Image (cartoon, rainbow, N blue to C red; front, side, top):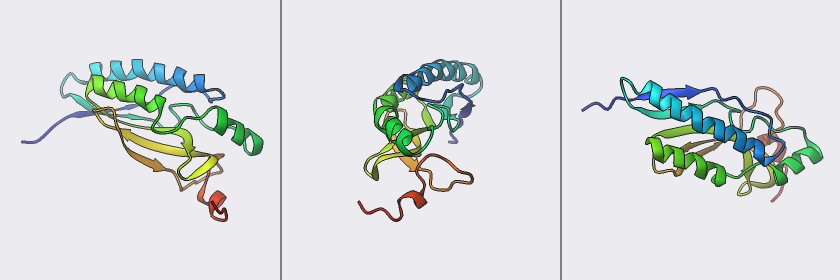
Length: 153
């Protein structure tokens, strides 16, 4: 038996997060977009995979130095966290896998730094994979390997 399904990509309207509420505005828009995409694109085959564009939740981190520290401490979420729990409920509702990305904290790697993190949530609402971007092709304000190679924990 061959399983067949549809996959949907969503280019979300996101805004540069300067407050945690900016993430939630993006998440609420995504909830509507995902619901519509699953309904509309399941006419032939069920949608089982939804991918959100990079920057589609919370946009990008602003600035470096003190601003990086403020955004890290006061704005960006952790993965898993409340934001991925919210997305997990959507995954359960529609029985989908979700691939997305957020600028987020990774305190298990380094405190007070912002990372570009992609993640996958399964139909049970669980974060089953997390990937921290380490290859940058242009200057980003997120933490790159070169920012931490000489740091001692």
